Length: 437
Image (cartoon, rainbow, N blue to C red; front, top):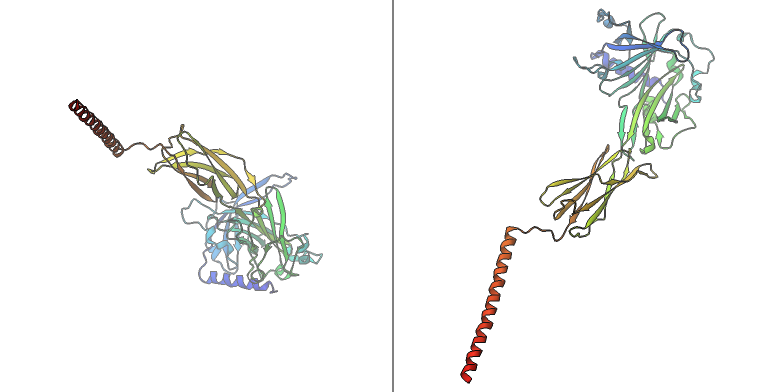
């Protein structure tokens, strides 16, 4: 496997590009949060307004030269970020924007991890003198929802000049996927090559959480190049990208309902860790079917029952609507019908049925039309239609009236002709009879 130094070189090259071509690092407003002294298990927390001046070059005085008076902030920090992760445009809203990035900074205590896949990172029983400093973590979220970032920083004791040593980020921390699609949960990390902790390897862990349920998805020890024993089927990493560029994204080969939830990407260095959370939402729209289809020919006064089944959808929420579109294009709402309870299938998707009764004695069904079932779901709106034909309800038109009058006149004329013929024949017979006598 490629050494972690390859990762460092790639990110340092990016940092050099940002510095040479004028990276614009925002001044960040942040909350400094820590426990109040003397607190117990439920210790109260204190919050202080803080200002973060960001610089990508530790030897530059540019950041200090831009400092202005700060009377509204309790703490001011001068942060060196060689990878320029804090210089992202997602953390720098346009001037006058009411949206601001979320930022919180906390004290941090370096310590060895006890999970089995990180044990090789701290084989020595002694902590290095390098750990004797002021340590902080910073958690940030972009105002546009396109970045989630977690940094570990070290500052010489009693100074306010921390330097970013480990950065873990996700550029797409809100993901929506349909069933059966491959999913990539973005997570990347950067390590400062000048830190003594950078040469001892790294470890990556992905955990899943949903409504109190949690499990290990996978864990990888980059130092010994091995997976932990608990690995979920269908989940993996791109090892080439992991070792060359720090791309620790989780790859799910086929999205399933059980994958919906929160995933936590944690990157370990000796004595350090940083993590970001990625949300995955599985959304599958329903498939609709109407029965009976086609509908039988109906008579006036007959009650017609139509059912619509929505199947294979997730999540649970679904709304039915029925409409009737007449031959003239007029649309009449028929309500939601009688809706059954949800049924859950083997793949954890849901099914539900709506039934509507069409009674021409109560509804103005006219000559029928097109009956449409509409299912409104988060994954999209679906429609299914069937034709309703009602016989013997055609209202006579003017042409029908004229035709009926013409037929009536014709029949009347025919009767008169027949009557005249019989009458004339009878008269002739009587005349001949009289002459014979």
